[in-house]
Image (cartoon, rainbow, N blue to C red; front, side, top):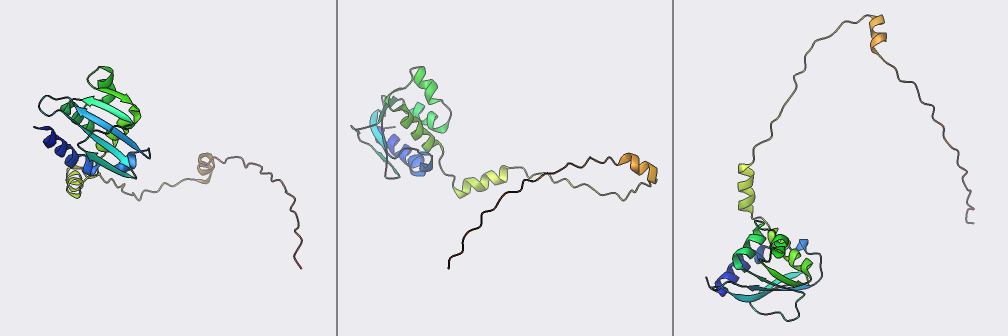
Length: 173
């Protein structure tokens, strides 16, 4: 797969359905370089004026820069790989504001579900079991002495209230 094909796939699959409500910043620009031999190249994801933009160019005034293999990038977006663990193990390189990179991944990870996916999830979900208790008409005859033994009365609590002084306001003439 060439760089442009991979970029178009990522843009169509994740960027176009990204949940931008998860982004806490007003602005960020992440420059992402895919380090694959066959589809290596650089693109950027910028969050500007409430909109996420994906373009296949360098972004020189970026807030974070990442170098990553394209397969690992997709695994991080899908939630199959932990980007922090991958960073610590050296499988991806990043510098700048790393919170912006993590925010971008969370935004792409939380893509909005289509109505078809929601319907499929509802089909797969098991219906909740309804349990109803049957009322029985059994009554127990109790004598007065037995009833007084069964009923336990709680002692009444003494309630005290403070009286507050109220200010009288002068009426306007």
